[in-house]
Image (tube, rainbow, N blue to C red; front, side, top):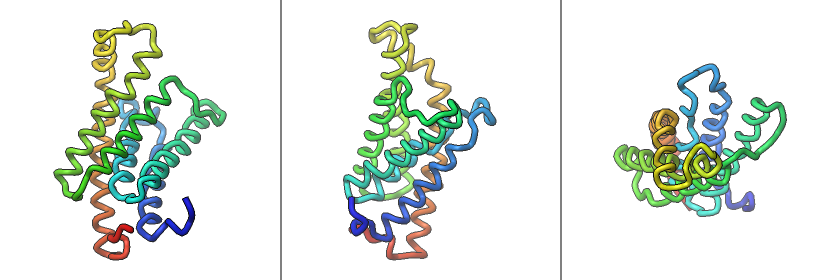
Length: 188
């Protein structure tokens, strides 16, 4: 990915993604029951919608999320580490959310709302496959997986709230920015 392939639109999208990824640094312990109320689903969806180059659409949001994971893990564990059980499933869910974003043809409140709901559903099912597979407390059958999904509802409820709120702010903000800077409206 060369610097020449980055136009003003790409830089604007990148800046928004980085700014919202920085919000992940707010300590979940400070919010108690608000843990998982994060912009990560919205970031993946936003990148999928606005980054027209398919490689940038996947690499930029996932790289920024990976970098923010490094810093969060450092804050939590006191060292830079990426590994946690189920990481592959979590990142697969984000890649699928980017792919969902690539299917959005027109940015309208309805399409973004429905896409955000789809993003949460993808995250809930795919990310929890890793939880289910890596936890011996769950039976390794459909019943065990469904039990895992039910226990994840409080976390997914917060993920839903975060994805909906941050999607509204990110998409609404970018659409407003496009009205002030018409050059970012043009995707090459």
